Image (cartoon, rainbow, N blue to C red; front, side):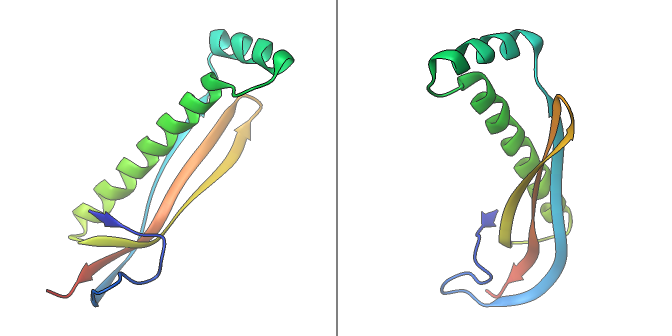
Length: 105
């Protein structure tokens, strides 16, 4: 599945627009990771525990968006974006969305 952040695919014509596709996941922090992350905040630097949590959430949201596009028969997703929002004190949603299209041969 070709995924681009642009509204077109360079060198290809969009034959059909199939519609909006999206994938999301809600993740909560793990108590053990949260304690280690809090300690890292004291000394500075990358908080790897949170970075890994968000990377996993982005991949899952992306996989779900791709599955939705494949179910529609899409060749590509254009205008792909990610968005994150806090759902609760300890939980965040990661949303991937874009437009599913069929490309001309």
